[in-house]
Image (tube, rainbow, N blue to C red):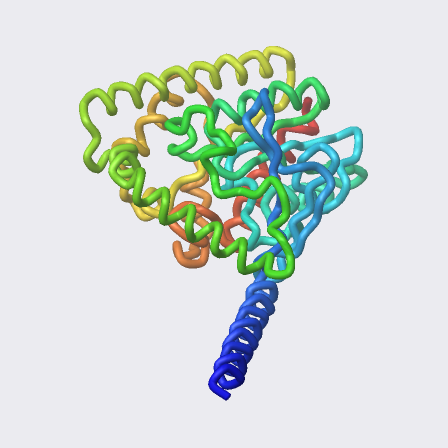
Length: 325
C-alpha cells in the first residue's frame, strides 16, 4: 500500500514538473527564445553568423542571414551595393526586425528619394566585434564586392576589444536541443552570465576605467593607437581608390546626454587627431528632439526610433555623395 502511494506521489510530482517545464517552454518560445541565430568560427575575422538562416526572435522580429553571412531585409542585388559593418549597434539585435534596422532603412529611403536608382543594402556587422574583427572582415568582403560603398559604425568599446573570439561569447554554434530549446537557451545564457561575472568582474570594471592599473591603462591606450592607425590606413587606401567609405561614430546614451567618460572619448580624439573624417551622430540625434528613452534601447544600443534617425542621416550623406562619384 505504501509502495503504491509513493509511486503515485512520484508520478504526480514528475507530471507536474513536466507540465511546468512545458508551460515555461511555451512562454519562452512565445517571447522569441529557443531558436537563436547560429554562429561559426572564422580564421580571418574570428566568427560571424552562419549563412542561410532566418528566425523569429524577440517581439516577433525576423532575423535573416543570407548566403554571405550578412543580415538582410531583401536579397542583396549586384550593382549599387551598400554594405554596413560594425558590432551589435549596427547589427541591430534580435529585438529589431530586419526591415527596421538602419542598414535596411537606408536603402529604403535612398531608393524613394533618388528616382531610377536601385541601391541594395546588406549588414555585415556582428555582435561583440572589436575593430580588428571588423577590419579583417571588411578587407575580405571588399574583394567580393569591390564596387560597394562601406559604412562602418563604431563605438568606443570597439577600439579596446582587440580580436574577439567566439569561444568567449554566449552564442550558439548548434541549435539548443529539443524538446525544450527555449529553456536551454535561457539557462545557458544565465549560466554564462553568472560565470563571467564571477570570474571576470574585476577585470571588466578595470576595462571601463573604474579600477584600472597604470599598466592596464597604458596597454589599452597602445591598443587604441594601433587599431586607429590600422583604420586610418584602410580608409585612406579606399579613398585613394575612389571607393565610398563612411565612418559613423555612435555615441552612448551618456555621451548623448553630455557625459563623456575619458576612456570613451580617447578613441574619438585619436581619430580626429589623424584627420579621419567622422560622422558623429550626436548632433543629429539631438536635432531630432527625441529623448534618450526614445532613441536608445539600453546604454548603447538603438531602439526603433534611433534606427530611423540613423538611416535618415546616413541616406542624406549618401544621396549627396554617391551620385557624384
